Image (tube, protein in one colour):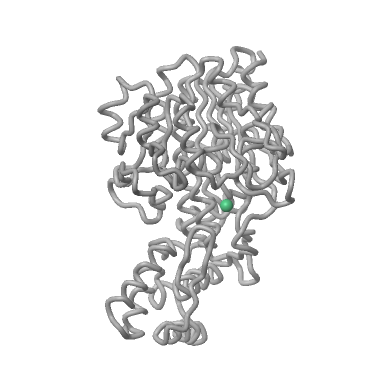
Length: 466
Ligand SMILES: [Zn+2]
């Protein structure tokens, strides 16, 4: 089956190399997605089938692949705004800057260039739509944290489709008389649509759509929760990245040509928390979104290009910590470390002195500890010692970039990581090269080891050259 897939893709790519230019371009960016995050996911998928080896994702079956170096103009280890700017415009900039060069001159990104040529443009993410990576495709600000200005620039982008969690700062904290971003977007002709069902009812008559999850408020006083619910925590009704891509394609197909950037933004957040199971589930959902684009490619193979890459690696994720690699243990994790944290904090809020048995029960339900995952006496004593600190109020919350979680939740998830053989070197980013996968028109140029500043021109080449 896999061989057939590859053979078919190669034949289609070869035949299509002889014909038209790319008219439909998908640019998938897995934020924080290093090669080990991808490998861990493929090996995990085989491990839960009790096999050693890999169960392939869609992206790794694309016929052309390579790697990218990711350093920024200011740092060997980039942040998402400098990397996003580079992937969008081919220009390296200073960490923290968005859509501008190190001297704050505006740089033109590929979405804006194609918009001027009449293309339909889509920008989507599993985190908020004003975050660094989506922002790099429409905004130009000296500071990535200027979320209100970034949102204002989104309102004036005129892009046909925007999808993801809502705005982080929908109002101007400095100027309370300024319009909030919901009002500004509506004034520029955008309709906010909440959830896939509402989208399907409305999209046919709408030129410009901002698709947000049904559980996000359209309230100018409320900031977004910041992200779609993590894949590992999703319940029925929660919006998914594949749904966003499916909706985006429906909207963008109204145009003769389209460019669609879709970010797996929450991969980065899970890696900042050094939460391996949550990371793997995010990569699976990101890959399912890529599958939607791949289905579109199969119908328009001679005119479609799909590029998948990452802005940088997050966490320094390693596969092996000296104790083998027991990835199957990760299937016992049923929730992200953030949700586990909420459960533990609620238990302590509701019971002044919860018993160790009560805490253990949560660890069993959330991570399989003591039942499916064996816990040694030493490990048990370690977890209990943190529980005792919590009772005395002496435990320390662990602050990660996007989360603040109790020492007990963090230590329990780290213990599961260790037992699974996953190592992490940092809660920040690293300079590890990131994978690059491509299929379709012009995809062959993406093979090899490149710098992230080259992807912009490789995509333009696929569009411009016959
Ligand atoms: Zn990050």
